[in-house]
Length: 258
Image (cartoon, rainbow, N blue to C red; front, side, top):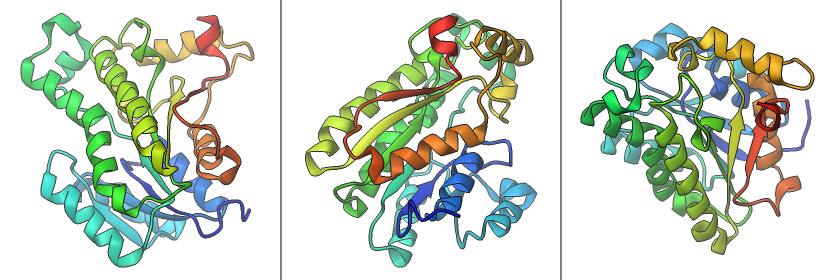
């Protein structure tokens, strides 16, 4: 157990199960001394896995968050304020929205207006509104983080539907880095490689995507959710106090060799 993040309070959104990036982040943050609050999508996911994960990690603040429900977003921060006076970190780890698996795995040009709008909102725009609601709790040194992917800037087979959403997420993050940066709040993008998460597993030919990525990394290894978590620890800590508006790849070098 490290004291690197002692007295730091971090909100980690998007927890689904033990394969989720949110779990890797929460666990590593706690190992390094942070106090963590978790969110879950609905009662089904809470009963299926989130409740037991929270017990395992010793997390007392576990709150529902459907980002398409504005009242629930506001309620989240109202509840947080009853427990914490300020927020040292916020991690946005959500990506979803397609109306069907067929749409998610299909070509972008065949997407529906509803599916495209939902994906953009949940995967990108919601980060903006979480930051807006969190603003009164943020202070100089606070750190906002979101999860992107190489597909935000390059065309990757099987990622067509999500690509525009991740590009929008990165643009939002960079604007927040400037706007909130005036008050000493940092915003950075973590870009993990292919990791077998609940969301990732829904992508077309994802097993093949993972293997192709592994073979193209210099060390022939894929990053894990805990590697991503360690990066979140660094970005939450004062060691990263001068890092703002950056995209940090956690992919064992895949982004330079593909």
